Amino acid sequence: MENPYKITYSFGFEDGSTKTFDILLSRDTLALIAGKKTAPPAWTELNNNKCANCSLDENLPTGQAGLNRYCPVAFNLADIVQEFKDYFSYENVSVTVTTEERSYFKDTTVQVGLSSLVGIIMVTSGCPVMEYMKPMVKFHLPFATLEETVYRMTSMFLVSRYFLKNDGMDSECKLDGLEKIFSEVSNANSYFAQRLHEAAKKDANINALVNLDCFAIMVLEAGETLKEIRPYFSAYLK
Image (cartoon, rainbow, N blue to C red; front, top):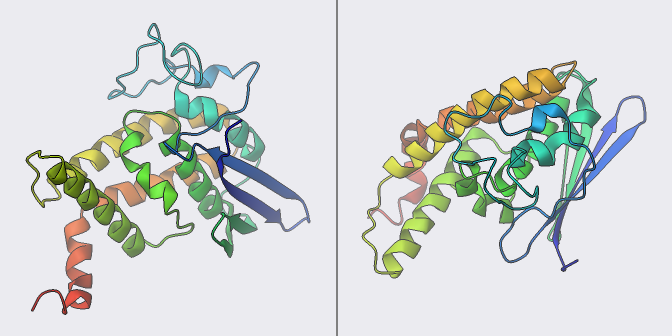
């Protein structure tokens, strides 16, 4: 295996039990390096509650899962969903996130901790809709607030405009494209929630996704959040 970039999530529960997940990513592309799965569950199949805006075709070759028989996000989340299927979203947990650069810790709920973990898997699995958010993984910030998320997402989008401009392509400094991306993400989230209803007995997995979707919807109103932080940029606006 190549020398991967690793992010580790460790969940400590009130009963003393722990769950640890190592996420391995390609250093060049930030694509998830998935482990082998012998028999993915039926809810991971591409045509099971397939997202209306999904461009994948089960008859065409794709990445880690061989043929597109499986939704790449569902395929890579299956083990995590199985681990949390018997948890309620409100249960208390201590979460430690370790990257090569630093560690983060938070006493929180299963929903919040799991949401942060699920977000990484969703954007690194090869889903064409989620792919746009993959650059954020390199600068992962667990347990981010809405304000932090809007700042990081708009910054990411505007850096992409900079790259396009440097490549000689017409690129305007507008957020219209970002709003379109997150509209598509929110659409995909709603369909994926239907998969999780089939997979989980309790609500931790579903509400982790709901938490992500709330952020996606709120990013559609990014302009309002940016107005609030505009005063911080006074040195640039003189």
